[in-house]
Amino acid sequence: MSALWVLGAGQLGAMLKQAGTPLGVDVRPVDIESTETLPLDENDIVTAEREEWPETVATKQLATHSNFVNLDTFPQLADRLTQKQWLDKLELATAPWFPVKNDSTAQYAYDTLGERVLMKRRRGGYDGKGQYWLKASENTQIPNDWKGAAIAEQAINFDEEMSLVGVRGKDGQCYFYPLTLNLHINGILYASVSPLKRLSPLQGKAEAMLSKLMEALDYVGVMAMECFRVGDELLINELAPRVHNSGHWTQAGATTCQFENHVRAVTGLPLAPTAVKNQSMMVNLIGVDVDYDWLNIEGLELYWYKKSVRPGRKVGHLNMCSGDLEKLQSMLSNLNEKLPEPYPQALEWLSKNLP
Ligand code: ATP
Ligand code: MG
Ligand code: MG
Figure (tube, helix red, strand yellow):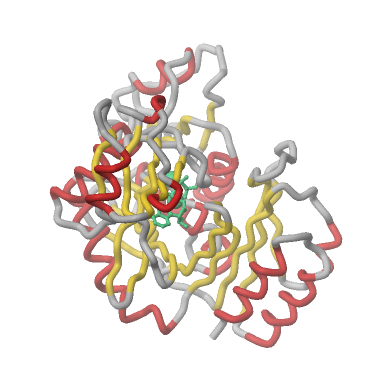
């Protein structure tokens, strides 16, 4: 079989490669800074682990390949302005917003969106970086370098955050994992839990929203949709045209994980139904050093990304999956002694949200 090249060589690329191995698919993540001439064959396939990239020796070679799946979709979703326009065009609910233009004023933001407005840079933001709060009570103004480079969004007083990870095949067939409940602390994902029976009444609605999008974009592969739940309603926060952190639990908790389904989809192999095994939880490792003592917790699975540890940086994750809820609770109390602040908050949140 031809090779599957991945634009980007971070943890997502590594996990795609791991998932391709049992299928015999030669997955080759490429560092965007690589200056090598890549031995690309015309029958090879190209995918990406990131929605945006600078033009480099490596990305130029990959992005001009004729089998780059979803090539036209990336720029549309990587720019929050065009992403929001897609949501509006498809009449999919999202936080009320407007584009921040050169002549936009904070007063206009307060008049149209309310007292608290979140500006988000159009490009490049992740883990809550690239956000700027406007607060009428503090008379915050729009800094000049945000004009023309951001969107402004109403602050949503959501009940909770959840995401839907789905996969669409070349023939249009879609499968969806169950909704995942997510905890963000300071804009960065700390923990996820799935499946939850109490979320199942929202599953159909969420699937219809993501289907509509994937259909409209003629998208192939895994896409994630982050949502705010406000009462019985779902507002789309943002979309990611790739495998997603809130789907990492599927490595332990689903018969076929998001990474394998993405590899299957983009290489034209049959998709696997997204059946789950048991109750799953995922904890992101953020700014903490690896501690192999974690492995003394029976049933815990460690994914360490071998990145240098910096505050606020995602450097690994832990998956826990079991049909025994007491066992999951005891794993959480065990972990509580092995992780620093603010993990007690995240572990307590998981504990409280387990069925
Ligand atoms: P990611 O790492 O998920 O790509 P990001 O930097 O692209 O993050 P968002 O997902 O847009 O940013 O926002 C990060 C978090 O900030 C959200 O998960 C949510 O907790 C909070 N947030 C975002 N938009 C709003 C909003 N309109 N109102 C209130 N909170 C918000
Ligand atoms: Mg994002
Ligand atoms: Mg997000």
